[in-house]
Amino acid sequence: MTSRPDLQTYMQEIATYVGDQLKFVLPIEWSVPVNLQESMQYSLMAGGKRLRPLFVIAAAEALGGSREAALPVACAVEMVHTYSLVHDDLPAMDNDDYRRGKLTNHKVYGEAMAILAGDALLTQAFYTVTQASKAGVSAEALLAIVSDMSEYAGPRGMVGGQVADMEGEQGMTEIAQLEYIHLHKTADLFMFSLTAGARTAGATQQQLDALRRFGSDLGLAFQIQDDILDVIGDEALLGKKTQSDIKAQKVTYPYFIGLEASQAEVARLTESAKQALAEANLADSQRLTEIADYLVKRDH
Ligand code: GRG
Figure 1 (tube, rainbow, N blue to C red):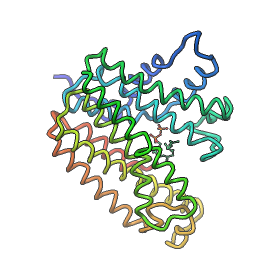
Figure 2: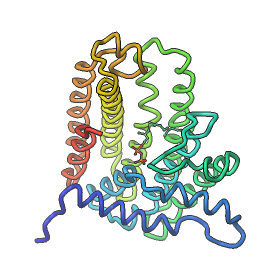
Figure 3: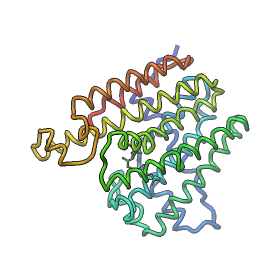
């Protein structure tokens, strides 16, 4: 019997496997302007954690599916994620100079090219999904994946979350607004990744529903943990400890309900995510459980 690699090794293995393939999903041909090729390549290969591709492949493998069949979908979701980061960093949005430890796309290629590289990554992602048919994924499954990708990344999903976030900067009065932002900006692509990976392995409706709940709870827990780390980081930096100090700072989960209740919420959501996983009747749910624990327990 071959022994199972530990989680860190598995994550590294998937990141390399997907990273190697990402070099080939972009058009490198004379008819595509060289600057556009380079700008897309720059952000896609800038060294993200490849979390969403990890979900795609781990979900496919949890159902007994193959890594090869899930690979095009894993690449596609990383392309969608990368486009969203490129656009999020633009002066009209977050106006960031650095991403993944490197200058942001618009700082290197200019704003217009960064917008177009984002557009090109998004559209090329849909083409990339269709390539899974060559690895034996059925046309029916691919149709559902393409439809889901539009739903989870589009106005009902990530783009909607981004708009709510933008509008929330004018002032947020309810935690429900923040929950909406977290669910759509973060959890939706987690849910897409898990269900799309599962679809490449022939998931049942019951399995898809359970994985959707797993992704939603885990995505929200991941983002609340991010909020907690944000606040703890600020406290360490500024020496601030009280609730009113926190309130004077960013609008995060701790801003609304305090640190302890936020930590309790992460624990509750993690348990709920694991419960959903148990109801998915997967051939092997261990890896997804390990990933969930790893993501919510991270300290940076
Ligand atoms: C522009 C339509 C549009 C959407 C932008 C992704 C995003 C929405 C904004 C970036 C800011 C942010 C904190 C979003 C929440 C999603 C998230 C956790 C992004 C970071 O994902 P990681 O940690 O990043 O997986 P890497 O770099 O490792 O891929």
